[in-house]
Amino acid sequence: MISFAWPWLLVALPLPLLVYFLPAKKKVQSAALRIPTLIDGIDGNATVSNSSKLPTVLLSLVWLLVVLAASRPQWLGDAVDIPTEGREMMIAVDLSGSMQVEDMNINGRTINRLQMLKVLLGDFIERRNGDRLGLILFADDAYMQTPMTYDRQTVKQMLDETVLGLVGKKTAIGDAMALAVKRFEAKEESNRVLLLLTDGQNTAGKITPEQALELAVAKNITIYTIGIGADVMEQRSLFGTRRVNPSSELDEQTLSKIAQQTGGKYFRARDSQSMAQIYQLLDELEPVEQEQQQMRPLTALFYWPLGLALFLALLHLLWLNKPLISSSSSHNTMKQGG
Image 1 (cartoon, rainbow, N blue to C red):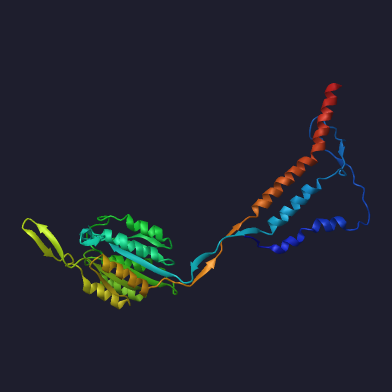
Image 2 (image 1 turned 30 degrees about the vertical axis):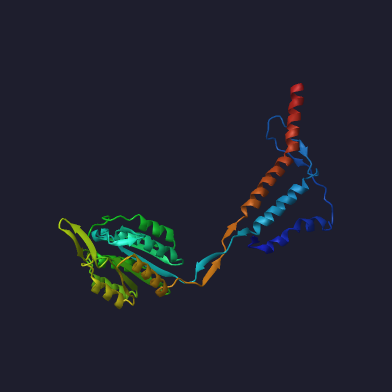
């Protein structure tokens, strides 16, 4: 709907009527207006009386539109929900070479660990309405793929576009944790959460997980760690099929220590079903804020009446100059006839 920022200015609308109907003490005869010689052939003594009829309706419309523009009309849009409190959640995803191991199954199809993450983690991201999310990718190094944002679709898209080998084949867990700590904003009212997903142990980076853990504890950051990988996998070779443990390099002890000392929790994802259950549990541990405030966007409309008022004022000026133009044309015709 339409509202006015300064509605009290509308009381000025009848002001011209008040001036018009005020009793005049003395009628002053309007003097003739002397026209300067601006165009060759026009007599400098030519006069135009201001007693001619004025376009009253035109001037009234101009006044009406100017007052409406001054009262600042604005369009009040539909209500939009905004979160009452902020939560910052950074998601760190392992892109090391071991993430290509195909030991996960979704809908009867065997896929690798990263493909499983894209499906299930993508659903988790879409449910985090109201949270500011960020995405970190790490392997040989850690880098920020998506800064903190409320745009969940962008975070999900950046996750879908990740490819293995993008940042190397090793695992820099400490660097990923340190980068997350650095990127969190210093907001006292914000719940700062790091979700760390990996399938190995720290084998690269400039900062060890222990050093990064000290930083996280000092900054009061809660870390939830998820170890990815099946316990048993059948591997085919020339000598037949044998069972192996594809998660033998997973450092569960370090991941548990990180989660425990930061007030988080360590989860073990052995298949896609357990991973889906972990995300549901995370929704319970870090629930999305339900109580929300609403805002209604405002769109300024003052330029519409103001622009129309300027157009009508231009028409009025052209009407005032009409007698002068007619007089000039007549004078030129007489001169040519003489």
